[in-house]
Image 1 (cartoon, helix red, strand yellow):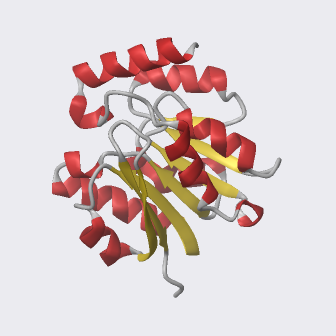
Image 2 (tube, helix red, strand yellow):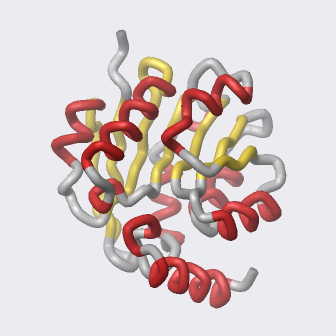
Length: 188
């Protein structure tokens, strides 16, 4: 799919369900690079990407990961998920990040080393935010990374209750500009 087609599809999906999609355009290369460079890939054997969309960040994960790293993609939109399955055939694709622990059992993965998220948490009801963050925390190994982008710092307080925030990076070259939260699950 061409970049223009990808952008038009994303815009169409946003117009149909802005609460789920969260942006009018896929993540920029600048944002994808900032997300992926925040991970020590030599220590990652299993990673999940939540809200994979058109695969803008997935593409950079594929370039950065080790050959044997297991990649799980989560995307609610059936059409986008189908395109992800075609484009990234070596990744397992699922529809609901609320079932993260169940998917890990299905895949035979004990825990994740990293969760990369493009979900628009602030658009979700508090109960859904709580459920997602609980699933993420339970699925990460102690010391595991949680890297998420948001379009504001409104989730900072809730993220800091779940994780140690190691840094927040502003990415101006994205539509809209974004903040990348680099977090770690506390040991023990």
